[in-house]
Image (cartoon, rainbow, N blue to C red; front, side, top):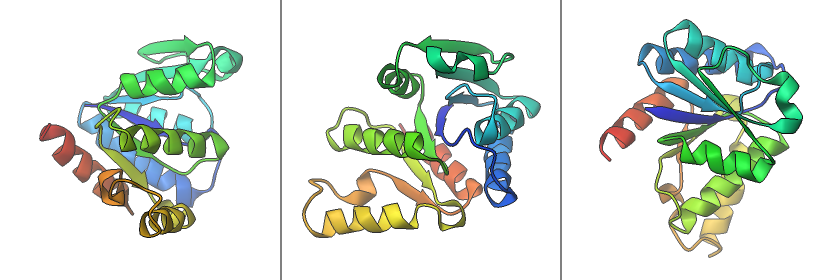
Length: 179
């Protein structure tokens, strides 16, 4: 399975790095491929290190203006010309998506991936890993959008909310395996 993970390149505390390591270990031990932003910093590095250390493959999709932070030992590294191309390549190379804690870039990625799914432009499983309640606010806003008629499809068809890496991984195995 090729799993795209959207997450922060910032260095963060243990309450964010622990779930990142847990997900990485599940991916690597399962022999899966991490498709990620290619950075060798912050949570991106934590996940890539964990996948690499436990036997998984690394496919990085970065952008030319971030090339200096790219991971050197990735199995494959692709450089897009801009962020829009990067997002398209990340989705194209993945069987499923996990969204972890992140900043504006991650928020941009998750909203685009949900918009594409809403329009039927992809049918890949999407998991929102709600570490330490990080996405409580976004989930509340999305539920309001659904309740007030702003979403033409049921919210539960767009993503699966997971509180733990194990829950996220179980959902991915069941969803991708059944496709």
